[in-house]
Image 1 (spheres, helix red, strand yellow):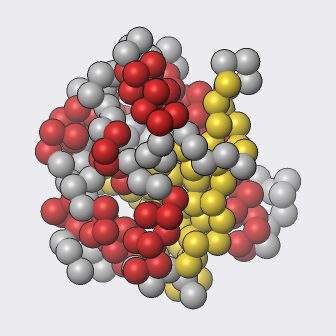
Image 2 (tube, helix red, strand yellow):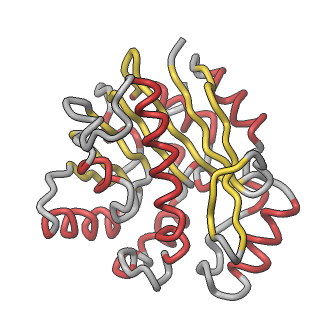
Length: 242
């Protein structure tokens, strides 16, 4: 297996580190993530309830479970996971993000274990839930990265990934329009590094895991982000062990 630490791209870490101080501003450089987060959380909650047989209306479906968020940024996903009852560990390649995330969690009264680095930061540990949303398109070695995620997933565990698809639509929407208008900071995406669902499925299965679901993330100016059947822009993937 390729060393997980080799998947970090220093320039990518630096790019996102420069956004750290503004991460929690819903109208700032991470505004798109703030708009996307409720839809991602809805998908994750559905997957959690289906996997562990939880009650749809329960407040803490992740109670007594360990969750790992890889590429956690300043904690937009890690904090909701903690509120759902999980003991959360968040890791990010940018130390600036980790510092902001830890300070924000403390202010919110949440005890989240944040660590700077790649997935080697949790070497030897396993987690019931592993998440990595909009991250794999920024790593140096996607296969090594997925292998590292697989190594962190406990038997009977659940993994959720999301990433943009490599299509003409994603190039137009995320790079030409979003980066071109400043809705997303310039240089955030490299379209050539986007993965199709088929390509990501091969990486997941090669790591000994099973893809259980692929659901598209769609966007319209009128309705914003939504879950749907089209994966042309972006998609979420539910993964388990055999």
